[in-house]
Image (cartoon, rainbow, N blue to C red; front, side, top):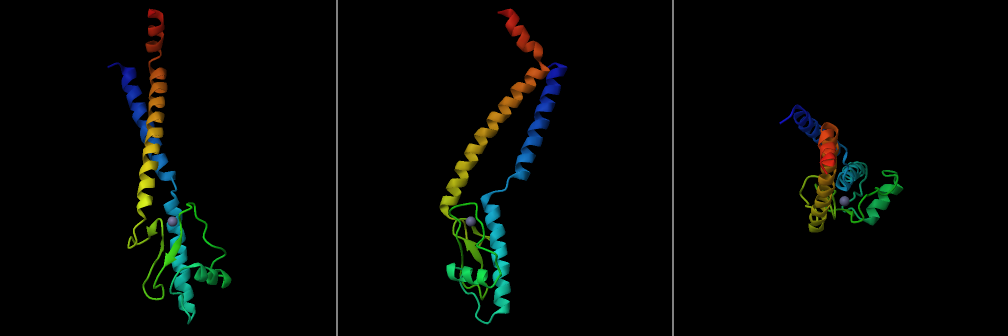
Length: 157
Ligand SMILES: [Zn+2]
């Protein structure tokens, strides 16, 4: 194996590693935003229940309006997934808010089965995009480190 090929492989894996960690650290999923909303809703409802005699027991359209009217929330939480719907039961005791689609923060309420199907499809799509990117980077790097390989092929014809 030539010196160029070793440098080539080294660069290839470095770029792969950097790209992989960059993608992983910058990806914000709809579930992350959903869980952020859940934690805001939970703390706002806990605050409301501490300050009121008539506590919020269930999270629904009515109690959401109460929170907005009493200025605990500016508006209904913004969601990034059309299936997000915030619910909760027994919130005056130890119930937790959860999303019908994404589940609850503490894992006591699991995401809906459709969530897992959707995640799987998304993962497969991302993987094929990723593989194509890796292939293109490999070819470009190979061309940079082995310009003679392409030239020799042409001159032999
Ligand atoms: Zn959700």
